[in-house]
Image (cartoon, rainbow, N blue to C red; front, top):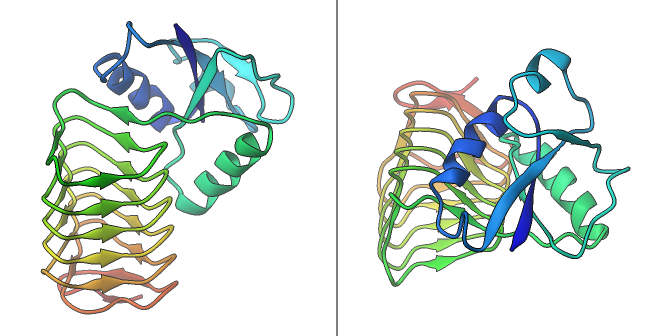
Length: 209
């Protein structure tokens, strides 16, 4: 039995705990050991279901440890994951049992796939991506590393989403749209045309802000 360490002890960390309890492999391949956080907030730590084990810097990785990351800011997520990888951490993917993933999908490592998500035929999903609850990715899409999609996001067929993109809850795209690296799509936005790298957009239709 492996022991899962969750990097990130904030609100998403608390939500991820319950997703893990309903994920493939929980209780048979791994249990939950606790949390790491480099800037813990006492009022948030008090609500955790498992103990705070320390910071990413001070924590000593054990042979039976595996890791997941509960940070939804893509850039910060990459920094924390890279810190742990440099220390020898091994990340596993958390995939909730209610997720529907077509057999032709190419999944990256270290992903978080929350309840009731759908990933369509022949899509390619990069490493360390977060797909929050009820999000959907259509057929033939590409999603880059560290991208985080919040709940009820709808990325439609042939869309190409870059690395470290944040897509807020309830946002969607038209088919075939391209979103560049490090872009930010505001909650509820509808992306009708290309979003350039590093641009923040909001609205229906989504426009730069």
